[in-house]
Amino acid sequence: MKRQVPGLAETARDSRPEIPDGVFLVRVDGAQFRWHAHKPFYVLRLYILEPSTSAGQSIVGRLYCTQKAMWKLGWFLRDFLYDPELLAHEQVDEKALPGLRGVVKISHTVVNGISLINLDGFAPASQWEELSAVPLSSAPRSNTAEVSR
Image 1 (spheres, rainbow, N blue to C red):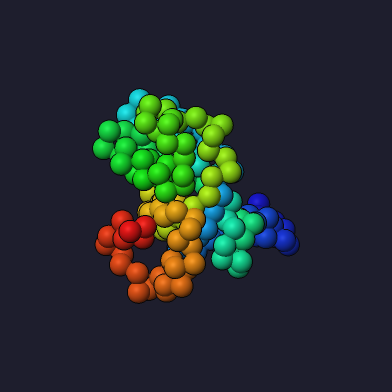
Image 2 (image 1 turned 90 degrees about the horizontal axis):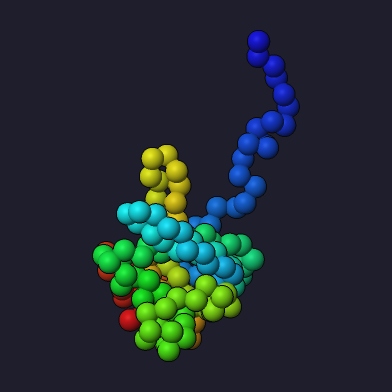
């Protein structure tokens, strides 16, 4: 038997607004290492500071810790001004990550029916004014490394 339940569709929708692809000035709110046999990773919770239209929202993404993906973790840590001494000793202190600020470029992808956020590029927070002035459509899409260089 089917029943009509007015208002049910509203509860099924995600209450959080969709964060568009783009470049954001963020602060690390949390980081947690997750062990996986083939692909260990850090879950990052980033709080959007700018642009003001998205300020206050959170971005949750993964940074993998495999040998092949280590360059991206290093890029994130360097551009968000992580402690250089800990970096030199190849140490990531989860308690030292909250509060770090920087610029992140994100995009969305769907894998096995699940929408995921890709952390495509990073830059120091000091470059926010310069990067936020560039329209996303004119930014190179194939070489995300140019976001911070």
